[in-house]
Length: 106
Image 1 (cartoon, rainbow, N blue to C red):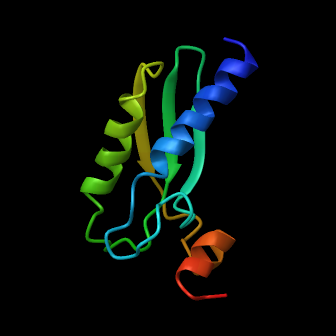
Image 2 (cartoon, rainbow, N blue to C red):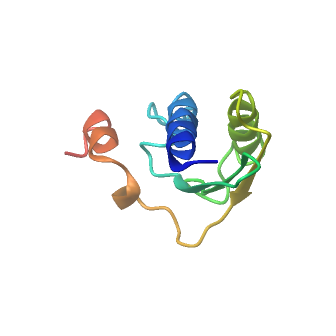
Protein backbone atom coordinates (compact mmCIF):
# COMPACT_ATOMS: atom_id res chain seq x y z
CA UNK A 1 0.00 0.00 0.00
CA UNK A 2 1.47 3.33 -0.97
CA UNK A 3 1.50 6.45 1.16
CA UNK A 4 -1.09 8.21 -1.02
CA UNK A 5 -3.63 5.43 -0.36
CA UNK A 6 -2.83 5.60 3.36
CA UNK A 7 -3.20 9.40 3.40
CA UNK A 8 -6.52 9.24 1.53
CA UNK A 9 -7.81 6.60 3.94
CA UNK A 10 -6.60 8.67 6.90
CA UNK A 11 -8.59 11.64 5.59
CA UNK A 12 -11.69 9.47 5.15
CA UNK A 13 -11.31 8.17 8.70
CA UNK A 14 -11.03 11.71 10.09
CA UNK A 15 -14.06 12.80 8.03
CA UNK A 16 -16.09 9.92 9.50
CA UNK A 17 -14.90 10.64 13.04
CA UNK A 18 -15.98 14.26 12.60
CA UNK A 19 -19.58 13.02 12.19
CA UNK A 20 -19.59 11.66 15.75
CA UNK A 21 -20.56 14.10 18.49
CA UNK A 22 -20.21 13.99 22.23
CA UNK A 23 -23.84 13.91 23.43
CA UNK A 24 -23.21 16.50 26.14
CA UNK A 25 -21.14 18.93 24.06
CA UNK A 26 -22.24 20.13 20.59
CA UNK A 27 -18.81 19.49 19.06
CA UNK A 28 -17.50 16.42 17.22
CA UNK A 29 -15.10 14.13 19.06
CA UNK A 30 -12.21 14.96 16.72
CA UNK A 31 -12.38 18.70 17.38
CA UNK A 32 -12.84 17.96 21.09
CA UNK A 33 -9.42 16.30 21.04
CA UNK A 34 -10.70 12.88 22.07
CA UNK A 35 -8.84 11.13 19.22
CA UNK A 36 -5.20 10.70 20.17
CA UNK A 37 -4.01 8.63 17.22
CA UNK A 38 -5.16 6.65 14.19
CA UNK A 39 -3.05 3.76 12.90
CA UNK A 40 -3.57 1.99 9.56
CA UNK A 41 -1.56 -1.13 8.79
CA UNK A 42 -0.77 -2.77 5.43
CA UNK A 43 -3.89 -4.97 5.69
CA UNK A 44 -6.12 -1.88 6.03
CA UNK A 45 -6.84 -2.63 9.67
CA UNK A 46 -7.44 0.56 11.63
CA UNK A 47 -6.68 1.12 15.29
CA UNK A 48 -7.85 4.28 17.01
CA UNK A 49 -6.45 5.45 20.32
CA UNK A 50 -8.94 7.73 21.98
CA UNK A 51 -10.07 9.02 25.33
CA UNK A 52 -13.28 10.25 26.89
CA UNK A 53 -13.93 13.55 28.62
CA UNK A 54 -14.00 11.58 31.89
CA UNK A 55 -13.85 7.91 32.98
CA UNK A 56 -17.48 8.26 34.09
CA UNK A 57 -18.59 9.58 30.70
CA UNK A 58 -22.19 8.44 30.08
CA UNK A 59 -21.26 7.18 26.60
CA UNK A 60 -18.19 5.19 27.72
CA UNK A 61 -19.84 1.99 26.49
CA UNK A 62 -21.42 3.23 23.27
CA UNK A 63 -19.05 5.88 21.90
CA UNK A 64 -16.10 3.54 21.14
CA UNK A 65 -18.49 1.11 19.42
CA UNK A 66 -19.93 3.94 17.31
CA UNK A 67 -16.41 4.98 16.27
CA UNK A 68 -15.55 1.38 15.31
CA UNK A 69 -18.78 0.90 13.35
CA UNK A 70 -18.44 4.16 11.42
CA UNK A 71 -14.81 3.44 10.52
CA UNK A 72 -15.70 -0.12 9.44
CA UNK A 73 -18.32 1.38 7.11
CA UNK A 74 -15.48 2.87 5.00
CA UNK A 75 -15.11 0.60 2.00
CA UNK A 76 -11.31 0.22 2.15
CA UNK A 77 -11.20 -0.64 5.86
CA UNK A 78 -10.95 -4.32 6.67
CA UNK A 79 -11.33 -4.01 10.44
CA UNK A 80 -11.39 -1.32 13.11
CA UNK A 81 -10.54 -1.38 16.78
CA UNK A 82 -10.81 1.39 19.33
CA UNK A 83 -8.64 1.49 22.41
CA UNK A 84 -9.62 3.81 25.24
CA UNK A 85 -6.89 5.42 27.30
CA UNK A 86 -6.87 8.00 30.05
CA UNK A 87 -3.15 8.69 29.70
CA UNK A 88 -2.87 11.56 29.23
CA UNK A 89 -6.10 12.67 30.85
CA UNK A 90 -8.28 14.77 28.57
CA UNK A 91 -8.41 18.48 29.32
CA UNK A 92 -10.07 21.43 27.61
CA UNK A 93 -6.62 22.40 26.28
CA UNK A 94 -6.86 19.43 23.87
CA UNK A 95 -9.80 20.98 22.04
CA UNK A 96 -9.17 22.57 18.67
CA UNK A 97 -9.48 26.33 18.29
CA UNK A 98 -12.71 25.65 16.39
CA UNK A 99 -14.17 23.70 19.31
CA UNK A 100 -13.12 26.34 21.83
CA UNK A 101 -14.71 29.01 19.68
CA UNK A 102 -17.90 26.97 19.29
CA UNK A 103 -18.16 26.53 23.06
CA UNK A 104 -17.35 30.16 23.83
CA UNK A 105 -13.92 29.53 25.39
CA UNK A 106 -12.18 32.04 23.10
